[in-house]
Length: 378
Ligand SMILES: *Cc1c(COP(=O)(O)O)cnc(C)c1O
Image 1 (tube, rainbow, N blue to C red):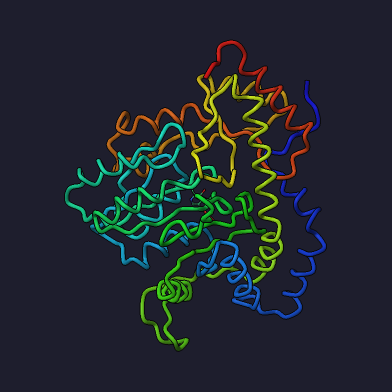
Image 2 (cartoon, rainbow, N blue to C red):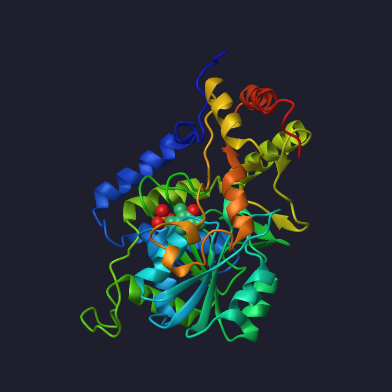
């Protein structure tokens, strides 16, 4: 039976709640007219820096540009190996290739879907003909990667660590928030991310003021102190003033929204843990819950049955990067990263957002239990 349509992510509910403040801040920008690097950009960078616990924040055009800028700031290019998990969104590997560097795909852990540090060590030792330069760890579905161990391995090989935190803003490890977990962090404000704007946007975080200065220069065509001194190769990667104005309002409710997502994730766990396997909750880790993802043996049948009941789901991601046609030349083919390959056949993400009514969450769980049936056990 089909009930009222269920939203996978309900951005309209959030806008209804914040409309007076968002509209007022947008109109203030229209009135002052400083659309490029207007005062709201610096105000937002300060507010987000405070939220993350003191990081320098550089607002940029989108999460993909943020990743490219992080690599540029470290001078990464041809001949350099950059280690990336294969089970991720395409932008992580794309940024590496855009700079002429070589992505080296690494497997992930079955229980968290995040970078497998043991496999990272294996990949570094096996690298031939390239300089191991950096690792981009991804906080998939909102759960931070294991930065403590990743930074140790990177330090032992004189490599840089970049966090792809596009999905994890509001996440934390032992109370230290995303943005302060890695020396350099990139995030995205794509509308569906935990902190989303009304278009494209992103940011970089660093504790190093000189790095922040360098990133600001790269953001604006590589300029120096004077506007027409070009001291490095940069790009046009500024965060729009209008998007910063919108983000300033949404940032005020991010923590409350994360708590709502946490509650929904715990409700899903409690209703579903007998019939499916959920992802792990490592001790001390706080997820941003960008997605609530389950693992199924008969994923496609379950997805079809849920669709019949009016429950939208998504597959993040149906194909690991080392098997993508555009990146296959950089991988070792089918069977080389078995956990990533297996997850891509089993994962399914359920509706997740901070404004889901309890009765809708209950309906989703009823439908999952029914769809999973007798054949599916963890
Ligand atoms: C969304 C996303 C990006 C890219 O962000 P954009 O703002 O869309 O460019 C990069 N990495 C991951 C893991 C993402 O989920």
